[in-house]
Image (tube, rainbow, N blue to C red; front, side, top):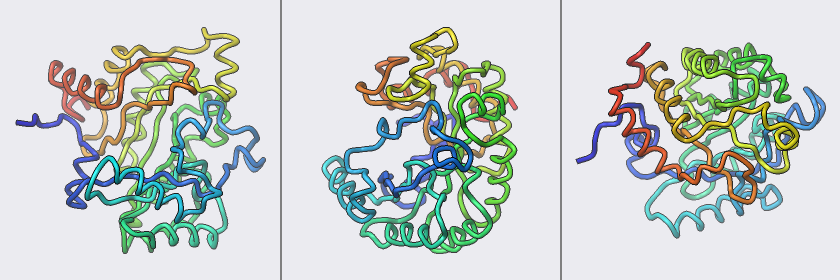
Length: 306
């Protein structure tokens, strides 16, 4: 008999909503970011190397429909009978003229097996016009806008060359709320300049905004990034967590955040060829099993320590 989860499990929500397994298909829509093209800065976030998380089929030059078809073929070999969400993941996927966004989103939604969109973006890359259009899509299909908050600490955001403030994150989330669009947010734990206390309080503060989905992961030092150069020059600037330390931290976060927020992810798994540190050797499902065991041992329920 399966034990009741002590947190709001996002995959279970999907199974209930769609009646089957749902797989995200990552798409490279050929976008860039405001902190890469000079609008907000140059060079991008110091931790970011998009090549480290793009699957092999995810290449902008292939076009939207081709990427989706290759993604469907890839996952059809592993699972049967699932539906798909087109996941615009690479860079800032609302950072283009509305006409361009319409063409790309609607091409994705027209592909066989696609039942909705997930649009990853930055909080400084949306406006009322774009959100009005996305709201129109959300009247007909599942749509989630996933904001990269990364931290609520402005000094940390500045240090990683994020190019926006937490006030802009809050503004974007509030501007999106009430439009029928589901809202996700993303935090990285362990960024330089953060303390354990500030990260816990940051997660609580973010979840007190009108979001429905939270994604978490540990800081990883990735080859080909400015952060990797900083780490190799002076590792003492960084506080990289062990698996057990990070487990303890996530348990505390779960106990403190709003109980109705869905938790989609806890860890990131960067391919070995890109990963410098920390090298845990723990797969996502193994981490989740450890987390659920620790939550039971400590009798922690999501939101139970608010």
